[in-house]
Image (cartoon, rainbow, N blue to C red; front, side, top):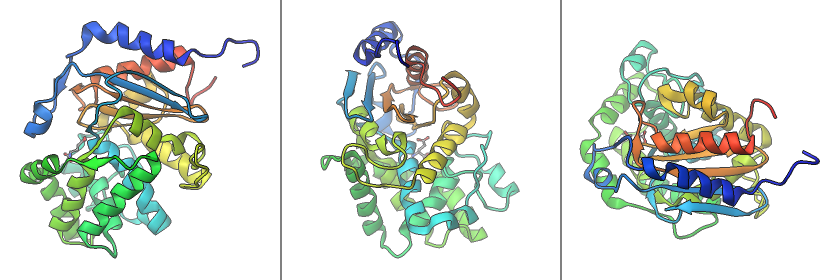
Length: 314
Ligand code: GLU
């Protein structure tokens, strides 16, 4: 706005980190696989990448962590690119209001998951990414796509995390078998889940993650390379889904408190989009009762308050 001071984003990010420091360790770290259970609960990272390419960071913003369900944003983008609006024949666009791995709703709604960000919906989307590929090729395509988005060839999958996910993913197998029975997914369940577990096991830093999400803050094109990733309308729609469905049954509360599209992962990361301004990634492993990063959500609420960034008004 004319006449107002430019934002000192580095000071804002540093202040948030300093103010949250006494609370680091709050929340419950995911313990369903040992690789997540052993993460230091006091880790905290935050990175803001602006549409003009400036990077502001604090804490452990350069340490890779397991992005888990945040990967669902990237596979949805990829699947929409391959199959267009046909995706919506197999997955809905409504908030679920139930847990990330709920089975009850899926039965009730005849095997069509509520949205692409709950586990069932993401598994259905991964089935679409797999179309025409072997699982190995699909995994390679996802990794290449995320590297392209982040403009960073160093991004890797943590194979140990992927193996553990596979060994303990009973509910995901149940969801996928259910959807196979309804015809929502076409490929063998172990192939689809093999790809899904690998996408969840992508390890990225807050800086890489915010950079990879920058296209969503810039109308679908990477503002730094000029590459067109998705159309302007599609970027808006992905943001709309992140806002309404990105935090499982905590999505309404996140929209209320933060007012920006976001997608959380059980590893404690959140990717958040301030359209026209920046992409932001936070990481704090302790989760709240909905499985979203407790201090990560708080850090984003503080950032939104201090910058005035909101999709709901100036
Ligand atoms: N790999 C996890 C699962 O499918 C991801 C859940 C999440 O990040 O919320 O159960």
